[in-house]
Image 1 (cartoon, helix red, strand yellow):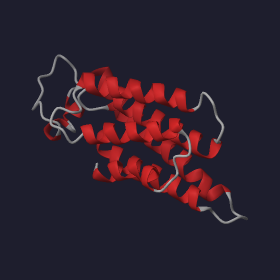
Image 2 (cartoon, helix red, strand yellow; image 1 turned 90 degrees about the vertical axis):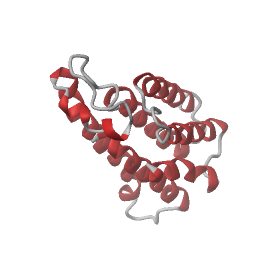
Image 3 (cartoon, one colour; image 1 turned 30 degrees about the vertical axis):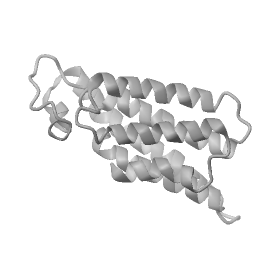
Image 4 (cartoon, helix red, strand yellow; image 1 turned 135 degrees about the vertical axis):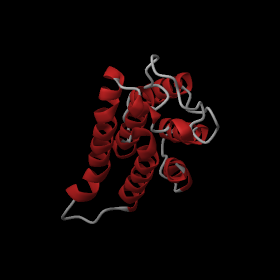
Length: 173
C-alpha cells in the first residue's frame, strides 16, 4: 500500500496538478491511502465514507473540464478507488452470520472470502473486474499513441495510476 500512497502523491510533486480540483483530488487520494495504514482505518463505515468522498471528488473534477489530460485520468482513479472502497473492501463485505476472525485490518484482509453468501460472490469478481478496467484506462494512453512519442505528462499520469492500482490490489483481491 506504500506504493499506492506514492502513486497518489506523485502528481503533487511532479507538477502535474494544473488545476485546483485535480490537486485536491490527489491530496484526498493520499489521505485515503494513508488511512489504510491506521489500525481500523479500513473499517466498514470509514471505507464507505472515503469511497463516497472520492466519488464526489470525481464528479467535481469533471464538472468543469478545462484540461482533459489531467481531469479524466484523475476522475478514473477516483472512481476506481471509490468502487473498491465501497463495494469490495474486506471489512464491508462481511456477512453478519459469520463471526470475524479479527477486527484488525491485516487479519481481516482475506477473511471476507470465508463469509459466503451473495456479498462474497459479488466481491469475488467485482474487485478484479474493477482492477482490470482501471488498468485498461491507465495504460490506454501509453499504447494508443503509436506514431508520436509519449510526453512527460502522460508518463507521470500513467505511473501514478499504475502505482495506485498496485496499492489497491490487496484490498480488491
